[in-house]
Length: 224
Image (cartoon, rainbow, N blue to C red):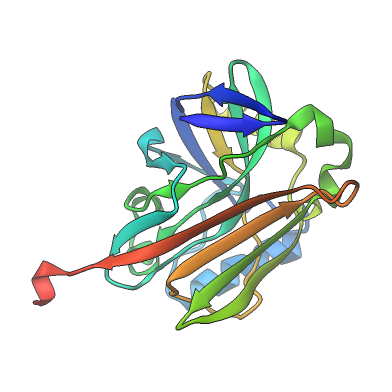
């Protein structure tokens, strides 16, 4: 696939996809997210941070995904991409089946594509002020746009710390994509909408990385 960075086109084929969960610096916020999941019948994680190893084929630069039944939703996440030995920061959505999540978090993530931005920034360019990068998401449901998540990357562990953990747990590989964790919901519950939007914003220069995709719900043959 083609990834754009500062006017250059980078050719990249992901070799591994890692979803990191419960990566917050503030453990109270981490616990808030765990409590949100527990309220929905989802078991707490056995280890923090959690690392879910998924198929790299799920990563797509796309403006539409398809799902079975309308009970899946996105989560805006900063992503780290190893492209030709250089680390880049991008934006992705850990789209997840919320019914299946109550049974198996890893399976609930594996059944959904992971849309990512076509644009990235070199990690070294923002590494010194990672904490200040703003991240926000919105959901359009029944034609109405809702603020869904809002915060900064300062809510999450430093990227070097996350990369160290990935290496220590023997997940590192050339061409890897790492989803760095997500923020609590502004609305208090999952919204199953028709469109998901997200943005990273660099407050020093106003530059943004944006992501937008539609969710098409397939007919469920078992319910016809």
